[in-house]
Image (cartoon, rainbow, N blue to C red; front, side, top):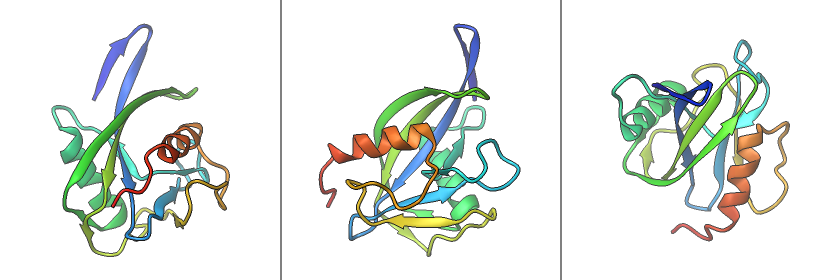
Length: 142
């Protein structure tokens, strides 16, 4: 779903901050053929017309990772201006799901065991760096 704002369209994106029982968070590497291929990000994807953030998140995580999320909690909304797109990221905390996350679109996955330290994977998308900084203020989530 896009809306005209200033001179650029805004791409609405549902983003899953998937937090495991041990507080590790899941990152996915953007696959070949997509902008910023090889960069690490939080999983998620674009909202379809008239789709809610919660519905888009469930659909995207099923399609990309093969998991069914239970509940998600809307956390923050941030915007980022990339050269190829202006995105509005709807960040949702996900702590309940069924299935084991797998890269169904050819992407690599990585559980970041301590998001308060420098990530062991790189490069990170700029918005991912911002989100990791924001997570530091969240504290333990269980």
